[in-house]
Amino acid sequence: MKLLKLALASTAMVAFGGLAQAEISDDVVKIGVLNDRSGVYADLSGEGSVVAARMAVEDFGGKVDGKAIEVLSADHQNKTDIGSSIARQWIDQDGVDVIVDVPTSSVALAIQQVTSEKDTAFLNSGAATTALTNDQCAPTFVHWTYDTYALSVGTGKAMVEEGGKTWFFLTADYAFGHQLQKDTAAVIEANGGKVIGEVNHPLSTADFSSFLLQAQASGADVIGLANAGTDMTNSVKQANSFGIVQSGQKLAALLGFIADIHALGLDVAQGLTLTTGFYWDRTDETRKFAERFAERMNGQKPTMIHAGVYSGVMHYLKAVEEIDDDGGEAAVTQMKKMPINDWFAENGMIREDGRMVHDMYLVQVKKPSESKEPWDYYTIVRTIPGDEAFQPLDKSTCKLVKK
Image (tube, rainbow, N blue to C red; front, top):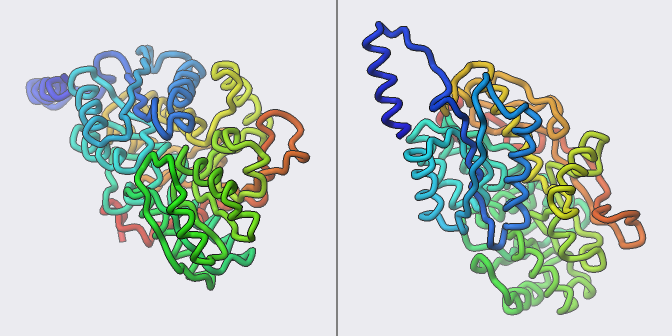
């Protein structure tokens, strides 16, 4: 349907001497939240990202330039074929104008191809791979919340500086895990550390015993967990049950969310070092958002993915309102012209390669005795300036970057 509309619009431009103006298609802006609603990443994104998108729409006023805003949602089940099929149906038949969230890097890379082909905006909050803003970049895309480079600069560097010189990686066997291991290994070696081993595990693994025993036998100072969601929490739980931490080896949860810490409990998670783009208890504004979010999510505080979805949708709607156009490249081009100043990002900006640059935070999980209230889990150890947290633009292999 969208392609048909584009064809008719082009015909109209020819018929009226090129005087036709861009406008909001179908007289409605449709936002599709595509993520994992039933699997390993459901607690990190899932329904919480849908709630965050709806909150942004409500706070924007429910309309843009007098046109209604609708929010759709679907479960990609962490499968590229299902994710691509939903995206094509949304764009071609349902008139979706922007797809948001999309955790699981392999699915995000597939959606990148679809949205680029069909001139539809894609605001990613949930996936991590830096390939999205390098070789696979697109003019319709923005990577909003975090990426594997930022995680490695934060957690990887901090652990080496604390004495973790030798590392063994336990890695999720798909695009995200491999990229996170690669980026972290580069940081380790640049800071005088060494990688002495690795083992890959399938996504959604229940039993990590054989993998953890290999890591334990390596004698590495640090076992780097290049995984996420329930894979990360199961790894930490089982490492504790095997006495790995108690024997002196450290665990580095390279991608951990506050929902993971809630699932683990402070007894197990205390002392973990993490890198995050958002913590609910940082400012008065983050606390206000978190309180409103929790009222709709049975008390759950937002993860950085949820917060990034809200911030990204709000910025997208401002851009569409500014140009009265919901075409993918037009909207993203306008987003790049506008600074981002909200409770998520202070003085944030979107670069040519689609990377939204903002401060990140190195945090440490509190001891049970230090926590004063539910979800009081983090101590912010350091603010990592955006220019340091993300890959320098001159290192990007994105074709959109002028060199």
